[in-house]
Length: 111
Image (cartoon, rainbow, N blue to C red; front, side, top):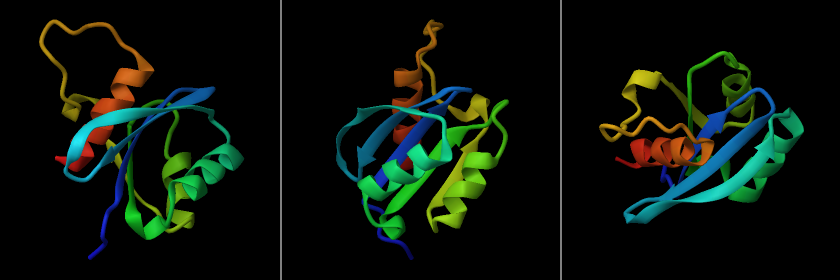
């Protein structure tokens, strides 16, 4: 069983990826920043975040396909692709922001 140290939520769009991180059992997830949606930038981020055995990553299924999923698996990083309907949202919260969505994904993983 893996000892997860960081839960990483990615809100993926065509050009950029918003990144949020949640630590196990510690406060609210935090927004880490935005990177370009390029394999080399994703590799660099994951290396910066630490040991692949200690990371659990998820992102929302969408038009970007499974390229990121396959890339992360090739780096030995566990990854989940989440259906949009499973991401918790507050009622009446209709404003979509990449930052907010990435934080919600990190929270979903930690729960």
